[in-house]
Amino acid sequence: MTAYPIPRPVSGDVVDLILDDHRLFETLMRELRDSTADRDAARSALAAVIVAHGEAEEQQVYPRLRRKDAIDAEEAEHGEEEHAEINEALLTLLECKGTGTQKFDDAVEALNEVLQHHITEEELSILNPAREEVSEQDRRDLGAIFLEIRGKHLDAGVTVETVRALVGEAHREGVLPADAGE
Ligand SMILES: [Fe+2]
Ligand SMILES: [Fe+2]
Image (cartoon, rainbow, N blue to C red; front, top):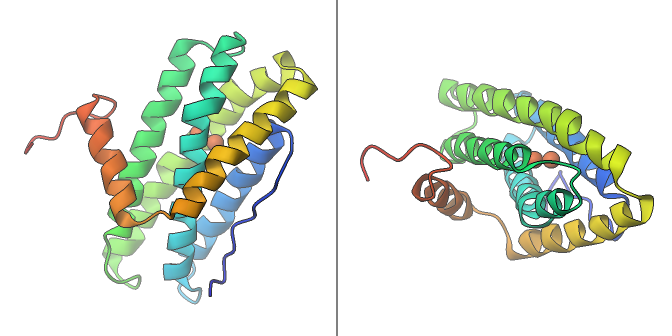
């Protein structure tokens, strides 16, 4: 039972599919700001779609756009860094026990900031070259691959442990600064 079902399209242009998820992020963030909404359910749905979407971009979309010379290595790496920052802010939000606390509101605000920054930058610096330099057929093929990886993550389920593991990996790999205590 959830008030926030995650759409599972089966095909589409990768640019449209990514934009649809970005709009979903924004809808769910709005619910997280609303004290009368089912904020716990919105938080779970947002975590699932952020992780499934980001992993699919990193594993397939960014590398394939690089191979087509639509984006450069720096743009792909920058996107991965921002995904790691989003996951870190998402982890803080998921670790909040209640949803009616100042801590929760602060975590919503922090996540909103990194998420909005990233989707704006990604639409400008990654989706625009994909629109301009990648053929319609290739964008559809890439859409199918994006949906396959996204679907695998949604099927596997995304929990606080999933996000904690991704954040830990980002620290170990130097995508995020090394943890002081580790
Ligand atoms: Fe994205
Ligand atoms: Fe992204």
